[in-house]
Length: 472
Image (tube, rainbow, N blue to C red; front, top):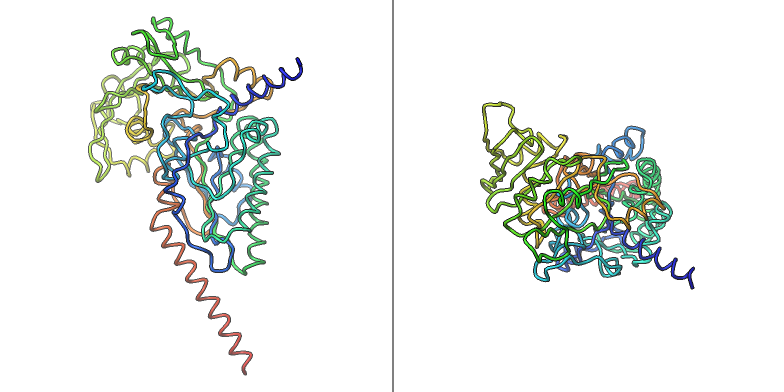
């Protein structure tokens, strides 16, 4: 009996650990009919492979060492803020907005933190990107954290079989197990997986070519990056207690704060009574391990660091522009001239300038974190520096058993930069929102059909020439 109870406890802990980064927003059924076209030769002509948590710099190194030689140079995919699976893949997939930044979040209607159950990993719950590939059971995902590499390869093989069995023109596949692998094994695990992925895609391409005589168009995308380093815990509860606040799962008193620790991540979404929001934000802004604190101020987003404060406002939507006003210092480092305290930025230009910066694409990410990213935004989001993380005691216990090397969630470059790569077209840097257009937008669909038309014309020309030669 004791052995059974210990096993049950381990599975419950493992289920909680699996919440570290797994997505939890239900896919929007409206996207299910996004591409109903069938392939003319009975095998998908394009594969969109969504990889959870593959970092940009690891993929760059893989290409530098000759991997993915059939692909154009990889581009950056800048995640949302927080840089978490639920919100990022919701934007990439263009599906229904998640309720909160993670499945475990504070629900203002129920006045409590919800979602901290094993049921969060149920079969019907998965990341918010519509995929044609299968969705695995909660037990599969739980055990997958104990054998991440094995399960990643197993699930990838399943995807290969499903692609070859499909008649859709475009097949969308999602691989979840790449993220646990990076969390558990760090950079060596990511590099080992990419070596296998390169061989897997090469073999899949050969099978498609043998069946159809043509190439498979492949697009790769991931939702965020990883610090690729084990972090030290930031004691958020103790920091708040020093300022007179008390963590509670409900808002019963003026000094209550609520936040979920659904995983070991680099960000914390905090809820507190409206009158205490600014005090809580200032309490944490100067704490050791904190990168910045973002605050919802209605028509503005406050940005606080240990040595500065600023506000971000949406100035216009067409073109998309943001006003950045420094109140103290220059917390985002966007004002080159110390004499300038306010400046309007064009989003497209700022994105080009900051996609490789320490905090990529800062203004849009900060603004949308509170305006349109989730249905129920928290008033405060804390971003931690690389090498620091937040997590509860149970998850730390589980992490000590299995190990962990890396996290994400913050605004930092390491956490934020995923991949965007293609073997049939040149691609540039995108964020989670523009990645949706790049993968599923009208221009991309038109470009795909142009490639298909050229291939069909070339095939017809080849057959005509062969027939003419045979008739001589």
